[in-house]
Figure 1 (cartoon, rainbow, N blue to C red):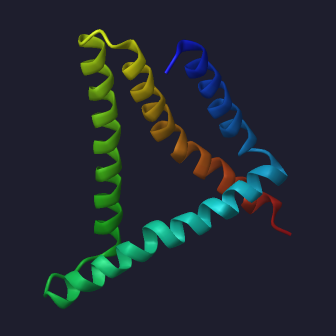
Figure 2: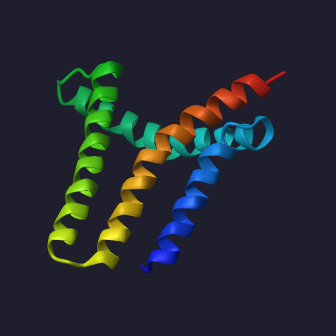
Length: 124
């Protein structure tokens, strides 16, 4: 990934974060984000929790949230480690690509929080 594309994508990501705090687009982003979480995170998590309960291991919602948060934290650390490793290998294009992945992983919770608050404020 070239430097110009990297900077352009970072600016677009920052624009998306800023746009998620506005009343109408932010509310729509929050709505779609909620649907994505319901289908791609909550559903599989509930299935895994039910399977663990059938196996005799009771799982609480708090434990599942901590596990998902820990997994997300590991993804962020892995992306940061990839940047460092690729910079040590003197591969700036691959380091920029990993940097964009890290920026996206950091921006997603911000987008979710801002857009859900915008959706809550825009609700009649």
